[in-house]
Amino acid sequence: QVRNSIAYPGMNVKVVGSHGGLSVGEDGATHHGALDLIYLTSVPGMTVAAPRDEIALRNLMYTAATTEHGPFAIRYPRGCGHTPDWRRPMTAVEIGKGEVLAEGTDVVLLSTGTIAYETEQARMEAEKAGVSAAHYHFTFVKPLDTALLEKAAALHVPVITVEDGSVAGGFGSLVASW
Image: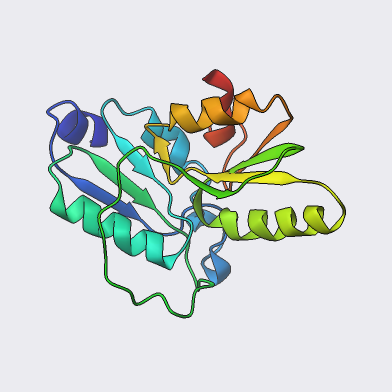
C-alpha cells in the first residue's frame, strides 16, 4: 500500500512510526521496528528520517507538515528521551542533510536515530582513552548526505556505523553501498 498508493503517485503523505528500533519496553518483540529502515528506504521516492532526540523529532514533524515533499517517513522509538528542555520553537530542517556532532582524527562514528545519544557517550569515553573520534549524525537515511559521507571518507580512518535496526539492509548497508 505504501509503494502503490503513496509512492508511485508521489502523494504528499507523512508516515510517522513509533517503536522504531528495538527499544519497545513492555510492548515486546512483536512491536519492535528493527526492519522499518529496510522496507521504507526501498520505496521509490520515499524520504526516510530518524531524529536523534526530541528536538530533532519536533523539527522533522514541523518540516514534514509544512513542506510538499512527497512521501516522507519519520521513525522514532517508544519511551522517554534524554533532553529535559525539549520545548523549543520548531524550525524547518534541510531535507537530506546530516550534522557534525564532533570532529576527530582517529575514527569516524556515523549514527542515525536516537542511538546517537549512546554513540556520543561512547565517543566521549574513547576521548578519555586518547582516541580522537568524529561523530556525524544522519537524520536522513534517505536521501543520504553524500557530502558528509565524502567528508568522512576523506579522513582515511576507520568508519563505524551505529544504528538501532538490522545489519542487513539498514543504515550501515546503505553507507557501504554508497
